[in-house]
Image 1 (cartoon, rainbow, N blue to C red):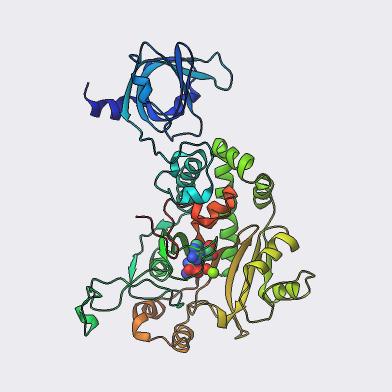
Image 2: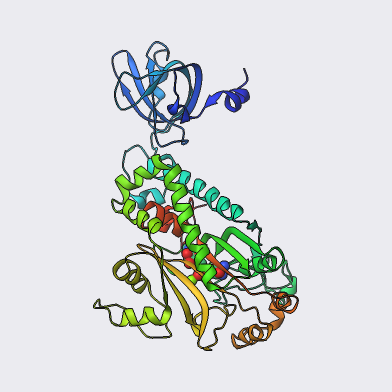
Length: 462
Ligand code: 4AD
Ligand code: MG
């Protein structure tokens, strides 16, 4: 048998821990978590990352040929053939009695994950290995499941997935927090942008929204789900320079429809994760945050509160709590204000809608009061802002004025304005930060721990 066929066809994943009967002559492979010697046997705990649980393997010293097992340590990768039989020991239902063992990769003595417990900071510095630990393996599996759950929700609701570009010539949020994309060498003095790859300034996108809107005004219900980039220099536990965003966009919808869909979406994916990822979720319930089950149940069971920005400012102004940042109408809410509203005052998820137009993006639909726009943010316990969205300005004249008063050139947005010139329709959409959703679901408090390779100021592991 060639090795290729061994790996492609024969190796079982550890989902066989759910087996209903014993199995003979099977192959498993993975990384040794622990090794324990007894007189005639060696006990290995094997994990292949497919589940949280390890498979206990009993290797007869004779089978291993005497010295083979000496080179097997924590972190070694092995392939083992054996019989899966009911375990007599407690703690596991099945164990594998090995017939043969092959060491795939020996482990050098400086393996950083020898110990059972490591600090999150230490593991961040070893991001290339941390998925081999229980917690980060569980996060990786949840991230994968959640991503499919997000897609399932929107597709079942009749949305079409649109792949919007990563490299862009426009600034969606108008906040100027963009990374430049160029092929020009900084060592050479260049006279004009026409020498650059695109012949104009290019950046990494901060949001797929403007592009996805053009598809909304053709397919009616669409969404995009991809990486977005922001060069904001905020070294917080909730911001990264590269994060993933889910952005649905719906025709014939207003800001209230937007809130309805957001709420249904959050409740649906939380329920899906709880129903399907119990083993991994137990790790977070037991070891990360004891309040997590109640918090998630609260989000699923209770209607989200909806308050206007005006009302939110009134509540914050009369709060007994002292805030570091003062409250006044016309200013953005700080995390401390967001958390007061959701954790202390309402004790549930809260939408804040109808925001002052000065602090929101140019594309948001202006309300009749000429002071506010039909924007909404969803605030949740522990995190603060999870979603930001709005009804979009579909009126050509109002949008044109908004771009101008932002100091931007109409030429840069000619294609966006075209969609309002040719068969414009009222529409609305929102953006949800995928990593913030993962923080909410796992109780993990640092956003750097829910993405495989976090990108933050002065931090770029390969
Ligand atoms: O509120 P934001 O900036 O909204 C937009 O970009 C809109 N264009 C979305 C839309 O309407 N289609 O960002 C949306 C969400 C935030 O609520 C937050 O969850 C997340 O994206 N987010 C970040 N997550 C991690 N790191 C950062 N630097 C983030 N900035 C925003
Ligand atoms: Mg926002």
